[in-house]
Amino acid sequence: MTGFFKRALWPILLSSSLGLTGCYAQAGNTDGKTPQSQSSENSLSEAGLKQIPLTVTSGVQTHAFTVELAKTSQEQARGLMFRTELAPDRGMIFPFTQERMASFWMKNTVIPLDIIFIRSNGTIESIAANTTPYSLEPVPSGEPVVAVLELAGGRAAELGISAGDKVEWQQ
Image (cartoon, rainbow, N blue to C red; front, side, top):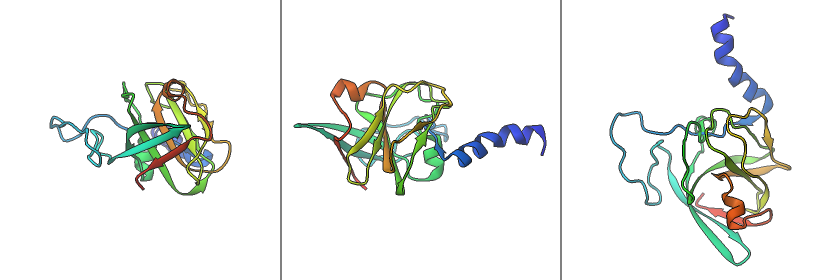
């Protein structure tokens, strides 16, 4: 195998062998057209992902977000990669086809994120707050989960979102 292919393939092989999922999604569009406003639910984001409503219920308070839906392995591998900002009411949800241990990393992720691990009953298992941009350190769930929610770094603490809170989204 040539040096080029080793350099090009090692991140893919590493992420496959460690079970790592990306923590990033490509910003901008690729058709050269100016994106239109994407504020309505079920529209497409600038990255071409479906946007859906999501709520987090924390005690008596419910916090509403519009999140990008990263369903395919390619969408999940891109995640929020190269994004330079994430609005406070936006995020990305990574639903899995079955419950599993999840591990994310921040490679090529420019901004800090709160990574929220969600159990099969919809409750938050744990929150990795303000993850470090560009870090290759795995950020694992503490138990098997069915989804992961990413919000702007510090947003969960700002809203008082914590383990045990309920997350609901259109599935």
